Length: 120
Image (cartoon, rainbow, N blue to C red; front, side, top):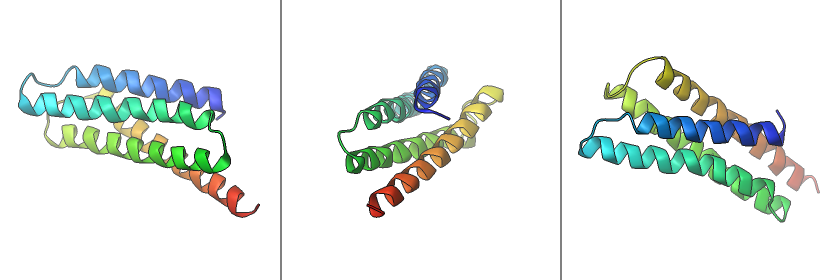
């Protein structure tokens, strides 16, 4: 998967998480989860874009670290929503799987970039 495809995929993930978050119950827990999920999922896309224009390989690796953390946090909140039975169905299952896949993709990318840094 190339940079353009990953930018598109992370942006779609953010949009889909926003749509999911807006379906949460209109109560204190729903509002909290809504804010958390919107913040971390949009951060995945924004920080990946920032990594793509990083000024150095070291900065790239650092920004990918943020992307990994935010993708994993997105996974946590989606899982939490599922655990609380606040939302169910194919859409949340798809987003849960996507958050896991994105986390693994960016962990692998970060490791590759770190190895590249060490070999120089």
